[in-house]
Image (cartoon, rainbow, N blue to C red; front, side, top):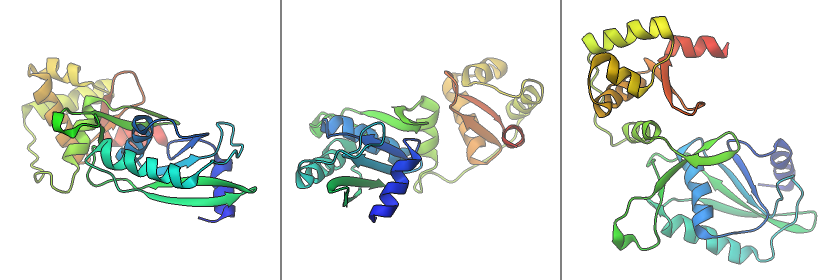
Length: 223
């Protein structure tokens, strides 16, 4: 990345794919940002840039790079591969961490001692923040991995009742679907995620409680 590209990136402001950090805080906090980018659309983490976009630079780019790599290797499960570049701008060094969307998602932030075998917290990007992923999002990420079992789609009475409900109400949550067809929340989530994988439904995360809509309804609301 050259200076012109970095200036353009900074001028865009923080968002789903961009986060500014004035300085390095802790490996756990940086792991949270890296994890969220990898679990969503990928993105850039810039060290040496203030929240308002002003360039302050870093004191030691070597130390910053080592700490970023430590966060990616030891505080994220599965470990994450990131690319780090140093760009000089306004006589100051900015550390640019480039994170690609990961085929191994969901990645989770975990305790440093991996021998504990404790599962960590999965994060995703929502607007300009890294937030904890919902159960529905985590399940969908697992189902979309390349090593996930092949999709098997069966349209039965439960699915037909779901479609009829959505035709009338436009949206449905996991709890509402479970009550509608009298099944467990776990089973309801399995069916809904399978329909998302088949591109019949869309999962929405823009509300306090995640919900699902038909694909055609989602397209119509964006047009």
